[in-house]
Image (tube, rainbow, N blue to C red; front, side, top):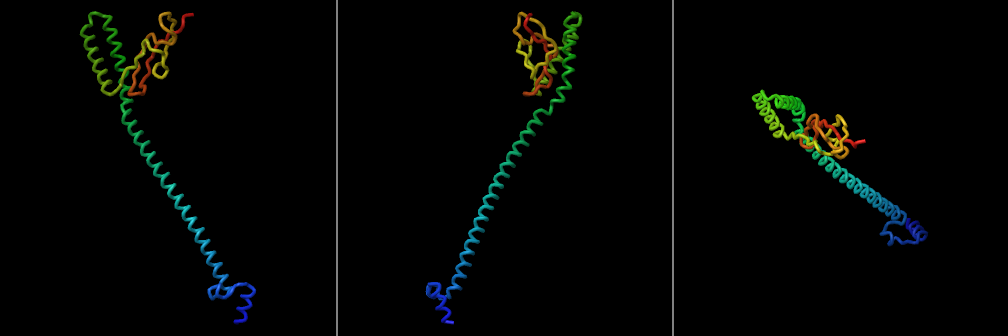
Length: 193
C-alpha cells in the first residue's frame, strides 16, 4: 500500500505532506467536494439574497398601493359627503322657479301687493336655504357664453354685445360647490349680419 501511495505521489507530483496526510486521490476528492459545497452555498446565498430583495420590493410596492387606496377612498368619501345634497337641491329648483314666476306676475299687477310680499319672502327663504347648502346661482347675464355652466336656448343678433355673450337668462342655473346642479338657460348674442 505504501508503494501505491508513492506511485500516486510521483504521478501526481505532490507529496503526502502537501495533501495534509491524505493520499492525493482522496485529497483531490475532498477539495473538490469542499469547493463544490462552497460554490453551491454561495449560489444558494446569492439566490436567497435575491429573493429577499424581491420580497422587500414587493412589500414596499404593496405598502404604497395600500396608502394610495386609502387616499383614494378618503377622497371619494369626502366627495360623497360634499355632494350628497345634490338631488335635494335639484328637486327644489323648480319650486324657486315657480316662486320667481309668481313674483314677476304679481309685480305686473299692482293690486297684489300682499301676494308679492309673501312670494318675495318665500323666495328669500329658499335662497337662504340654497346658500346654507352651498348652492349658488350661476352668474350669466353679460358673461361670455360658457357651455360648462350655460345652456343656449337661442341666439340673437346684437350690435350692443360682443359675439357669444349672454344677453338674457331664460332660467337661472345653480352650482353646488364647483359642480353644476343645473346649467343656466341663456340667450346668446351673435354678430349682426
